[in-house]
Image (cartoon, rainbow, N blue to C red):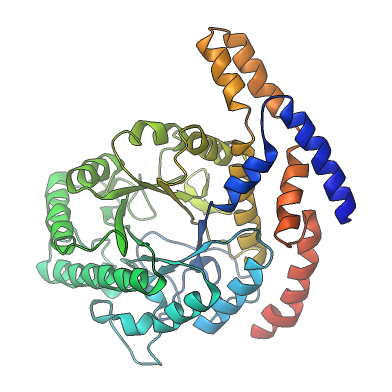
Length: 421
């Protein structure tokens, strides 16, 4: 699309939004400051770099075999650098501990060190992309029975406690190196496939293990710890130790961040409604933006009703500085670069859509008791020329407008991805 056409369409959109009191320039400027943490595991189907070869344990499953899966850290970095040229804005990069690089030496999870992530730190600093981090409590022999920090086996618990401690140390080192906070998100798959005999025992063990991991304080400017819940998973359908209620209580009592994943709840639950319920009690929250489809939670994010609702709740609370946004999906059935670009552009579209809501007029109608006007304004906002504002944002960042990015991905697929097969 020609730049002159983008400008003309944007001017028309700006006028229409302006009639409802919305400043589109201000919305674009605010979007500039919103960073999303981009999940590294979309590039390789959560395979990691430990040489395991396939995911085991933890209820995680990547389906599909589209050609071009990244096999090394260099290939993951190459793919991300290409994808980032198609995504407007400056964002973050989210690593799991299983993406260590140890020059072919076998390093177990309780022995990982900062040096094993130095390539990532140097690369991220060179790009100016901050890192976030996650311990990896799955795809390991000591997780095969479905329990890690909540295991009845003290030796297993000790192993994973040491892993958690080292991950916090690594996350803090990343934060120091990049001159800003590296979030460290803890999700454990512990649970039973069928009905347990004693739910409380495992939860008490998990509390004890987590307390040992978090006993060493780190400066919040270096790292912030978060704990993430889940309703159920593959092989933990009947009981998950770290339920939503468990982690709300634990995070509040230990002054940690709570992570909510859009796909980790009952199919009729949505996290958009929970954000305003938790913000009064938590200084900061972390959200994993994903897309649940029935029982599965890790589909590519779309510009859909729930994603826009999530962003709208953050915008209405003016909580962009209190809510850490990350995406969490992995789809091996389609081009993995396309998945990254679709998911991130959809997340940013949703944030911009929320920023363009004629909020003041809607609030005024509510305060005046004109609830019909409130509903009407919400409906009218849906057909405002949002696409023209989004195109302007892409153009300003010199990334492809509209579907133009697809041609570049197809070229990359034929020149790079297919050569890996």
